[in-house]
Image (tube, rainbow, N blue to C red; front, side, top):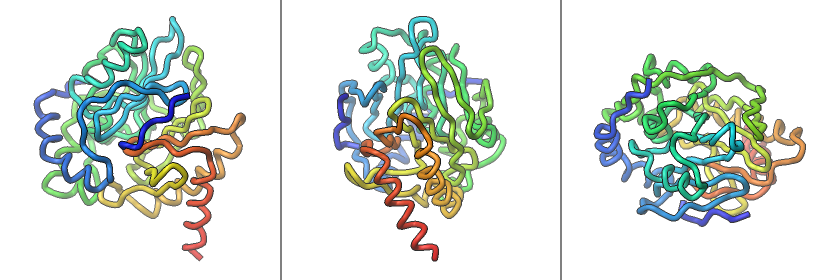
Length: 271
């Protein structure tokens, strides 16, 4: 296992994506604590290959020769350059991407979808309206003049709606779906083997510390925190227990202990 370093209709057109990112990444990087950086060599955490744009990460899982590659999110690049580098390192082509699991439908997590036109896009049912551009983001950032950054994705079509506590069997992968409403209405976490992909429902704050969702990009912080606290209990029922918590904007956090501690502190603050 290689530990990730401490750096951090599919009509999505590259030029509006790049324009949006140019306008918003400085503010986003400041808000998330993740530095902007150039392309980095593909790395791995457990079975996942990490596609890092220097702001956000997407993840690639090999589901076997017949089932292809499963992506968790599609990154912030319209041309999916970081993901393409990862696929090359895996010995796979972009055509091998069979499935994209969206943790949520903010543009920095789905801009690269247009690079994989044959992939099935899956998201929680509650996230489909946002993914399809039928509703607007309700976060402080989403309601700001730059909120159109979250709405450029109109034209995306989700191929399959997912539901809380659903288990997906894709090739040699077994993926458990958890609903984590709060960051968005249909934010999801995906547990696969020893990894739990958290999207923006949580942020790492060091190798053994976790923080909740960031208010500026979230629809409902109290709901998001309650969802994350509930996840701490639900993950304890998985066997074998996951050994890595994997947020999208910060490095992974080892073990379930940091989440359990955060949840305990959150519950104590509510008394």
